[in-house]
Image 1 (cartoon, rainbow, N blue to C red):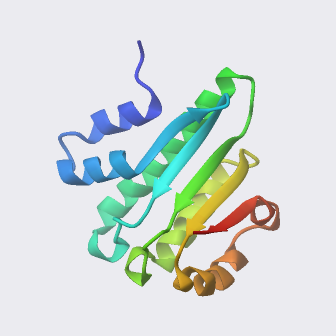
Image 2 (tube, rainbow, N blue to C red; image 1 turned 180 degrees about the vertical axis):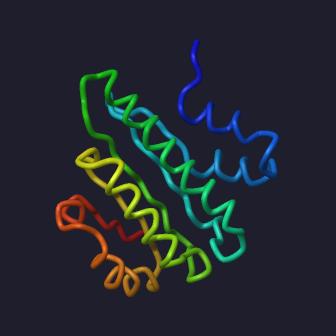
Length: 153
């Protein structure tokens, strides 16, 4: 059996990056299959962009791309071209957020995965996110913004 996108990524970096960092990625950013569609899961409360160096931020972004590719591979098995993303921001604070990192990820994903998201669900119990959303939503293209569902826990 061949390795999927995520397994290949983890193998590529197993002797390059701190094992704790890879474990953090694997346990909090992953893919699941539900109703014949790939779902990308992002639990961000344990990520602190300001505490990781540039190289780890690049690896973090690369891992996100691998997870989304794997999600779309699952959907493709069922002749579907889109997947779902679930972003969990519960218990997040400003320490879990970097506008620069967000803009880099948003730009890369918009260029790499055009028209491949069915819906993006953002789960949050944060008052901070409501204020941040007013700012970051301006950087998200209108078609994608229409596919975003904010779920206040």
